[in-house]
Each structure stands twice: as structure tokens, then as C-alpha cells.
Image (tube, rainbow over the protein chains, first blue to last red):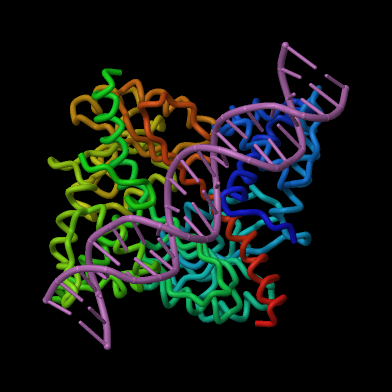
Length: 215
Length: 215
DNA sequence: GCCTGTGAAGCTATTCACAGCT
DNA sequence: AGCTGTGAATAGCTTCACAGGC
């Protein structure tokens, strides 16, 4: 298990998608400077990240694209692939399902859960919807450790508790509330309200700033 | 214009929602330690954030909830409120619209845009959908500076370019590609693929870690 | 000359720890 | 006794700057 800091993991995920595109255009090598431009970062940052992967570059050609992709896979992917569960098949849950359909072969949403009996047993974007009562059973059967929470705020904590009791080790939480979880569970909050308030704040601040600078 | 660092802004957004709930339960004062517990942070962190707001607490009662809410509003809200545009009314765009309906009175999505003529002129979750050609016109008319991009990856850059030409100063980008933008525009990337790959990675690492510690 | 690899410096964010107050 | 306010210490992340290699 390769140990990589959190921000680096996020950048590696991005690099890999960019590198796939390069391969498809038959570009076999890339310089840190060029990958940085594509990713919106600095060359020094890219070289640090590549160091974490253990990839050695060549001053003439740069890094081998395929090798970068493979080493990023060593870090990010579970060797046997990984199944993910989704709890909550409302607007957001369906958007997430359609978003991931056939995208990452090693990381697939294989089961969705909802309490609404009108949704149960339907197949949405290729994913079967089960009643929430079957969460533990199906997570055990499919050895699922990663769960996406796309439920309303007032159900988020209880859904998280259920998921953790069923063996979840990582939660991706779209509900706008912080979760109380034991230390052995990793939680990533994706709070759209916060994101939007952040953008609104900095949009105004950048505006004030460029005015002050006369730009 | 109050100057606050990026991470603090994100926490203030969360604090405010938690504080609203406290007010509704008629809790008028709160200690840093208790707010920290609700927000999933540390008491020292809360006190630092409160310092940035300029609020003074009382060792006996803690901070006045209403005062915190007001000062956070001074930082986060545009005085006259702020209108937001959404580009892309697919699955994700609709989920975002439904998510924000009637949530923040000072920050409202007032116009949505899409190229699909089947969607144009419909009203979805209370928001009118316009053709993309009218972006500049309507953003000018409504003085919109914040734009949410919920378009496919291959349209993200051109949509961003359009939005910026129409006066956008802040973009919330849900497409899984980095945007090339001028320095006076703030971009927040909300990349679901990256979030999920992060969770999957740390779920495995936490697992390996708790195993090593025998926990 | 222009690249990579990396120690060292710099920067930002968080936490410590304690004086001061009630 | 237990809280807040905050200088100082720490930790984490990014950038600099340059030696080494093709």
C-alpha cells in the first residue's frame, strides 16, 4: 500500500485522466511543464507528485505516459477492483449514477439503495436499486467498503451509521451536514452549498481586488 | 470587504447552517468547544475562525449565536443578495437546481441555460431555462457574476469562456477537467470522480492502518 | 540548453499553551 | 473552575533553486 498525502491523491486522479487522453492521441512522453499546464499546476508540483509515484523521468523525453498511468493505478486502484454502494436515489443520486456509468472500470457503483418503494427493484443507469434493509446483506456479499451518501440532511447520519455497521471504511457525503464517525472511517464531504458560497465570496473579492489594482 | 482565508470561508458556511439550527431550538449562546463538536473540528479552530469575524465571546456564556450568524453574513453575503446562473440542465444540473430551491435567500439560481431546445423555455424547480445564446444578455440584465458549470467535459472550457466573456467572476465547475481562465476569475472545481477515487484510496489505507494497529 | 530530482526555504493552516477574565 | 483571546510552536504543502545528466 503506497502512502501518498491527500492533496497528491486528488492530483494523481486528475493526472491520470489527462494522461489517458494523451495516450489516445499517441503521445508517449510528457514533460513536467506540459502536464502542469494541462492540470493547471506548476512543474515543480508535478515533479514532486511524480516522485511520490517512484517514476523516473528522462531529461530528453520527460516521463513515459504509460508508466505514469500504471504507477498511478498502483496507488489509486484496488488490485481486484472495487465495488461502491450508493444510498439515496433522488435527483442527486441519479445524477451520480449516470455520471459514473462505464467510466472507471476499477471503481464501479454496483448497488443503489433507497427507502422509496417506487424506486426499489428498478434498474437506473444500469444499477439495481435495493431497499435499505438489504444494505448489510448486499455490502457483505459484494465486499463493499466505499459508500456514497446522497440522502437528505436529516437522514445522513443514520445512513452513515448503517453503512458503517455494514462495513464501510470510506464515505463520500453529499449531505450538507458533518457526520459523526469512528476514527477508522474516512469521510470526504462534498457540500455543494459550501462550494457555492465560497465561489460567491471569492468572486466578489477578486472583483474588489482587480478594481483596486486597476486591472 | 472582509478578507478571510479560503478554508475559513468554507467553515463559516458550515457554522452558519449549524447556528441557524441552534437558534431554532432557542439556544442563544454557544461555547467554542460545542460548536467544534457540531462542526467536526477543534475548539481552537473555532476560536480562530471567530477571531476572523471580529466577534468577542464571553467566558461565562460563550458566543452569541445571532451575532455569529450576522457577522458570518457580513463576510459571506453580498449586501444586496446575489443571483447565480447555471449552465447545463442535464441530470446534474437538475439535481443542483432542486438542491438549492428556496435554501439561501441571499444566493439564488435565477437563470439556467442549455443548448437542448427540448429544455429551453421550460421551468425546472422554479427556474427558467434559456438558450445558451442568451447568456450574455441575461447575465448582464441580472448582474450575474457567479456561474455554475454542469456541462459535459468536452463543453466545459467553451462554456467557461462564454461565461467569462459575459462577466463571470466566479465559476463552480462540476466538469472533470481543469479550466483555463484569466487570473481575475475564481474557479472552484467540484470533481466527483476525484472525490470518489480519494475515498476509495483512503478507505483502503485506513483499513490497512487499523489492521497494523490491531484495532 | 533544457530537462529531471531534490534539499532547503517559504508559506499557510492548525494546534498548543497559557495569560486574563468572569 | 472553566472559558476566551492569542503569541508561539508545529505540521503540512508548495515553490525555489540548483546540481547532475543527456
